[in-house]
Amino acid sequence: MTKKVLEFRLGELFSGPGGIGCGAAQSQVRKKDGTVFRIKHSWSNDIDRSSCETFRRNIEVPTEKVFCEPVDRFIDRFDTLPKIDGLSFGFPCNDFSNIGEKKGLKGKFGGLYEYGAFAIDHFKPKWFLAENVGGLTNSNEGTAFEKIIKRLRNAGDGYELTTHLYKFEDYGIPQKRHRIVIVGIRKDLNRKFLVPRPTHSKENWVSVRDVLERSPRIHTLPNSEITHQSSTVVERLKLIPPGKNVWNSELPKRLQLNVKGARMSSIYRKLHPDQPSYTVTGSGGGGTHMYHYEEPRALTNRERARIQTFPDTFVFEGSKEEVRKQIGMAVPPKAASIILTSILKTFADIPYPHVESRWGVDTEEN
Image (cartoon, rainbow, N blue to C red; front, side, top):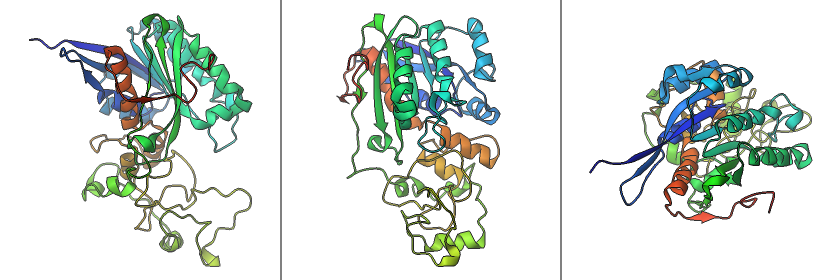
């Protein structure tokens, strides 16, 4: 009997190196009658050159359908692009993050969610997935979040939203990364997305040791360049216990940092081997590279990629710092796959364990 396959054609904005794209490729469900539901990339867009090169290398999509250009220019192409069934956009979080100036909608990146709404207006996909940092809810005294939700709910022909703050460590990701994910399903389809139930708790979180020591070959893999550390930094790291940082360690005065004002907890912070990592970030100056729990050094990009759940076969293009940025800004592929698989199950009428969403099914009514 010929296997029936239902493919959801996916378009992506702000695609980065392909965290969601990699997760989409891993997402597939099968009904009892043998029908397979899966996702196939149709096109993507990002402004960052090295991210686009990484996406082309690793994600199964026609090379010419990866558009590396500003999103305000890309939207002029909408009439020339094929139809899509799904849309994903992890709109830039710089102005909503709890780190930085927190300009919200008033910042350079704050209004970029609107391009996702433009795409929904134009393509009217069956579903969409939007992702951003947890700080989004507090931005502009909460008005930014309300405005974004209202815009996405009313985009296209109208969408039923399920909005939730996901704690990715509770889903088997070896990292304490908390992100708001908004899933919208077109109202005329009469389907309701449910938040997949967490699979892990504090008692069985996946630790950084679990992933970094999984293979002794990790340093032979691509993107494993070592960051040079000065003798002072090496000496400092040797005295900082696992899980501690430069501020809460008993260091001799010559190794302490003479910094006034705010003290970031990630400065020379070493991982704890038996816990999930703290959040992998994409940028930052000295002391923010994430540090190994045993060796006095910063993590390699491959180690960061493992914490982000990218497979070892996923090769990043660009300089070491460009790759660092790509990894830190990406959605963990495993997290994306968990949510996208639940979307597929929603359309395949396959029940799955679920929990109540943080803000209910539709924030206008809850």
